[in-house]
Amino acid sequence: MQPGYHPQQQPPPINNNMTMSIVAIFLFWPLAIPAIINASKVNPLLQQGDYAGAQTAAAESRKWSKWP
Image (cartoon, rainbow, N blue to C red):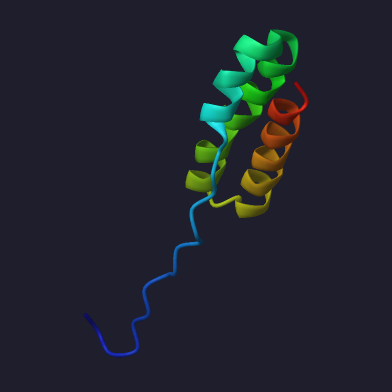
């Protein structure tokens, strides 16, 4: 490691709410579909470095999976 080298800090992980979205299928499946779609967007957005986009997708997933 070179002097002055500072590894880039990783943002904290975001809960994608996939489990809650899948459980929502059994409660009311029409609302579970957008929940699952948004939950599946979280990890790719984090890998691209779009932390704000991942937070938004996780919040949307949470919103759709809690309605039923």
